[in-house]
View 1 (cartoon, rainbow over the protein chains, first blue to last red):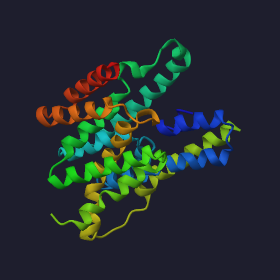
View 2 (view 1 turned 90 degrees about the vertical axis):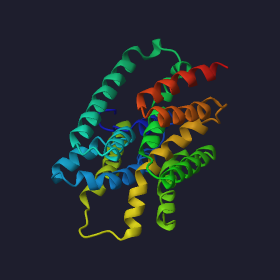
View 3 (view 1 turned 60 degrees about the vertical axis):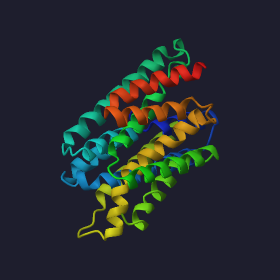
View 4 (view 1 turned 30 degrees about the vertical axis):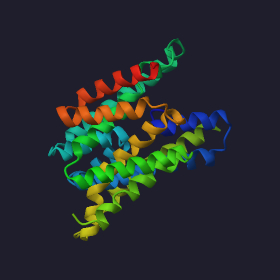
Length: 180
Length: 99
């Protein structure tokens, strides 16, 4: 599953749905919904990836995840132009993710709760830091804060599958309507 | 039962990631649209952070994550270092969860 569906949140959802004996259509629809946010991410990366031929873009798309998007965006916002940065990071992530999945299958039950060590917070902290480094104008900070608050509220209301796509699509409207 | 769902999910995942790269358009974007697209990346990453901070693992936070996230913001804004922010954040959240 990890080799074909390279999407963390979806994989966790799928495991849950499989154990609930959910029908195939429900599983696929859930995954589609969870990953709708990548539609936004790919749209935002398009300007940079336009330099690639179509085959290269289709190859890049398979490895597009929250993490590779965030790292690539951070890189481009700091003025970087290298697409090798994206591919190196994204493909390494794919390899490590699948090796770790294999390790989990083999020795998973021997490890206790990872939350105890705070390791689960590393990704959140990384994303937070990328947002801070990407802020160039006061308006950016407002948009980031609004996006985080909208997504957080949706998640608290139990609508975590649509939280990111809703917040990610709504918050940039501020930039459209408020002139700087 | 499981394999059709995995293959279907793989197709769905790939579809949303590749579609914007395939359907391209030429010409210039109107100002409003380019301002929207410019604000998009930061908004999406911030939107990924929101739920992880207020509702980690799906349950309302007991305070450790928002405090640690505020600390990360402060450290990264001050040192301009992602690594320093992540290390401080992870250590802080581990300590705060014990309290």
